[in-house]
Length: 240
Image 1 (spheres, rainbow, N blue to C red):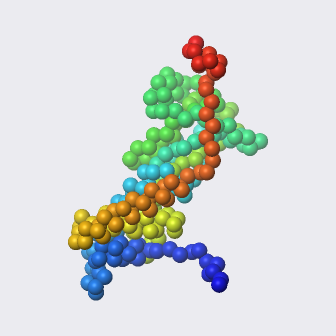
Image 2: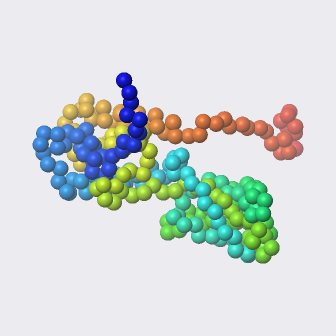
Image 3: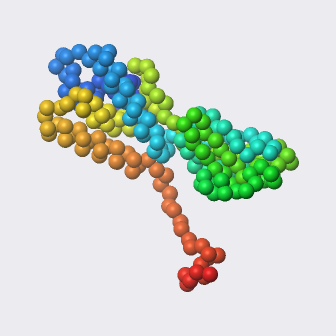
């Protein structure tokens, strides 16, 4: 017995909609799936993708480079990233990279002089607004520092919309079954299932597939924690 040697299987928009309708028993006995039904299913599919975009997925993590401008603290990032996970300054001459400290909105706002004393950036804050994504550096780069380095940042991008009937979903193929069952679940209020056992199966399967894949969708590395000895009295734990 031999395998195909191919792992490129995928489904396009209308095929995912067809599969979801079949789970619901719609169109399974010769009933036509109309353009209106495809449009409704595509709308639900995009709503589902928008919801999943707000979660951390390995395939939506990307890296980009920011060119610095002397004295400028705020930078508009292209594509409005969902989040900036980390950032580091990269020295052009040596390629050395130094991590920047991530700040909350309040930590950045609490800084009294955001552009008055330009120097080497040591921290960043990302503001994901609806119309744009702004990355703030502190302190702002000085006129001598700006030409010598760039900022590299890892971010979560938004998943692509499905606009045409032949668009593929912007996710790995192992997520297709989970997407299909969750689409069927989303369509269930519009196309109720008369069989209670079938509806419960779809609900359970949608949750089980998503949960299993979300548990897989992470980096298989260990996290190491250690106490802050400067804030606490050595290893014995009394506060200073």
